[in-house]
Image 1 (spheres, rainbow, N blue to C red):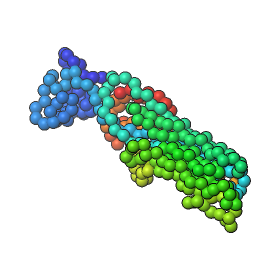
Image 2: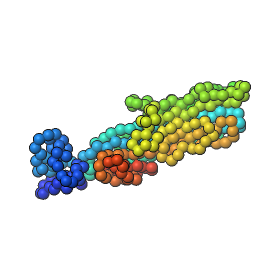
Image 3: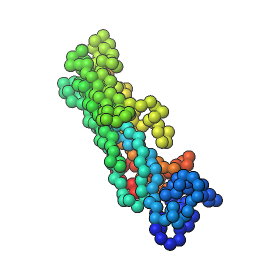
Length: 294
């Protein structure tokens, strides 16, 4: 709660608001609230009625695109692109009201007969604090992969017919870095096997970032592009792209749903999501849509 605007103010209330600890040292509070960055601190003048503000870092990962399927053991289908990935910062004020958190669903995978050119579904967008990440593009059946936060991979019909198709594009959206990488062309990851087997493309990875950047916050690698390996779907709350079918009959798999994670230094100062603490930080993880309240 904000410090009182009149009456008695206590060191414990100041510590709760600005992250200090016992035994109290006034030097802990230099530069916080209205206190100067050095020199004398006056409890009444510097802390009465000061808004309870604190800095957060937050991660927004959108839902991954679905992987495309194949109707037989000769066609190549594109994998789903990862959900868009953005890492941001903000300063929040306690008592300012709830903030909506939206988690995008993973795109559905599908089974594509060779004579149908559609691809799998794209993932849903995730958002928080007025910012959003774009759902990953669905993988192409016998067509180009869809564009999205990260692009879906392209597909290719057997016998060198109807293809190879390019991958979808990742969304730059004016962001630096961009939300995600482009999906691979079917020709990039193709394998004709005597010009009979169709080529296929992997899905793009999220954030157009290195692996170390995608493990921001808690060591989990989010927003991985789907692979063409007949494997499983993207795990829930990862933003991973769905896997597609290659040289086998069956549906592509669903992309992983998105996630929003908020962290700040010190003890818990907000509510909403699943709350944990580690390494001097408090984490709020939203695996489904909800509200964060500072």
